[in-house]
Image 1 (cartoon, rainbow, N blue to C red):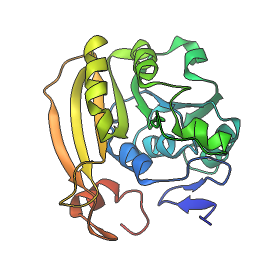
Image 2 (cartoon, rainbow, N blue to C red):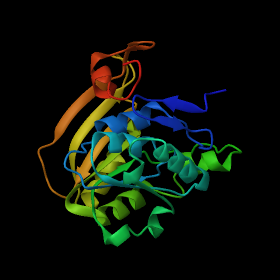
Image 3 (cartoon, one colour):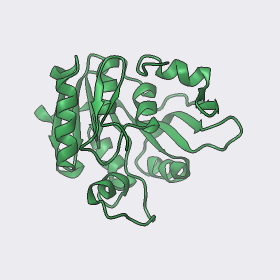
Image 4 (cartoon, rainbow, N blue to C red):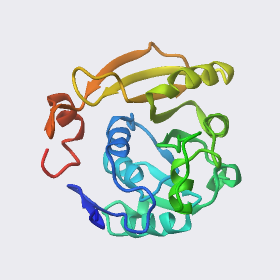
Length: 236
């Protein structure tokens, strides 16, 4: 059985009430996204609040975190309240299509580690299915709604399976979004990419492309991965 919590350098994430536990994907996005100069950040599908708390540690922004899972929202509120950043994080138990930002604010950055299993068989755990399958929030709906909530120079930062890259690029083109950063994430040096870190904006910029290898061998992390996550992991 996995631990009920995961300790980071400046906060602890309890995830015993959440369908999806702390994992590499969330840590990657929380560490990779550009949060500099952000006043308002939105975390869509916050789960345990990991990405919201990572963004709070790296910025002075006010952060709104939303999720359709009531237990996940309760867990995020607990985790935020026990952290040094709780006063800057507000949690909303709502689906994205019903979310109205407080004061009709627009966001400088929208973060999401979205559900992405579209055709795989579902298990008996309804909560986990909601977190992992995209019937409740397709990639198209996520990008459409996010675009409507962005500041003119705002950014959307996502982590997705690599096989979603072409679909995302097509949707971005339809929505007049520009991919401004792209990082291919490989588990090992000689393996193909498994994940894709993508930043999108309505404002064009020169595309920054990179490749990130996580391990050289089992539990032997690369210098690049250590540098990215050193402010969070206790043993980095």
